[in-house]
Image 1: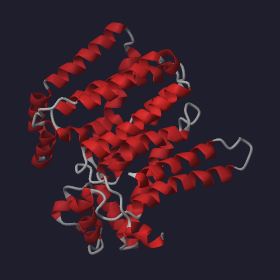
Image 2: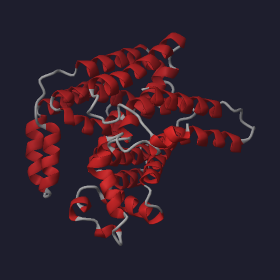
Image 3: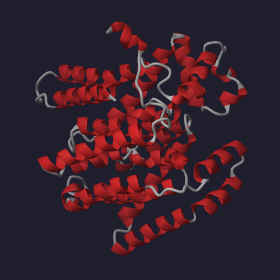
Image 4: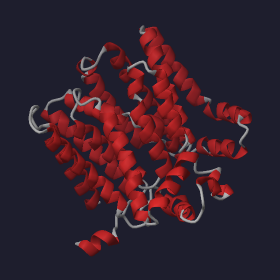
Length: 372
């Protein structure tokens, strides 16, 4: 646990330091500090042992070794070509053309993810500190990037493209989502953000909000038969089966932990609702409020299947915005509470509830051990 905390805290401190360099001073020095801050988690991921992240051995390392032997990206085995996605295989082949060192592949893969996330957050630097957005990313999603590498790469790309919703640049938004989809098809769910943005800013009455809430609960209540029906229209039988497996298998335990966490966030949000929404233009504020409610309520899907979290990742990445916004709306005691709850969530999720599930609990690095 300690290596992760050192990585997160040192990166966040440097991001805070860099953003607090006064305007008019050396911009080169500011971006040098940003670069060092981002290199910390990138190197941290790149030099890890291959035991950190179960998907390393399930597909990532075998696919990279195959990339080192094939003449072109179209020559991958049938299994990988129809499973791992075009862009992920192209990335494997491109890096293997430069080096056969898998640690460099891990380094460059994390470099791409961190840069997309950072510049997705950097757009909002005037609304909240950059380090807060990255802190939310580290505590909620960094461990996933060490394991579910295809999906987190796709989500990082989509996360960057979300800014075009607010600029009303639909084609730009679609471009980044489709680019991410080439790595993992589930990222197509992010397209839902655009009609949501339109709806909450077109229908702003309380009746419209209640109606959307009722529709959401109804869709969740009948999720299994709806998904089962829709899978008949998917020509790819393997894809249809995987989608069904994400939703099927009702769990016996209710998601108390998730509901408790989001209930706490809901209290913080509602307590400072006007302050939070005043930090943004009205259209963005309406969207963020609707999105917060959506993210909180959709946690009930955990009751359907443990695998459904792979779907929820596509919407919960917005916490990289919501957590910093709430933080900046509170004073010292509230800010300490928000930081504490984020750390507690990270600890309980990765170190208590899913010790073997994420495959990233114990960090080890023979490279760092040899150096230090």
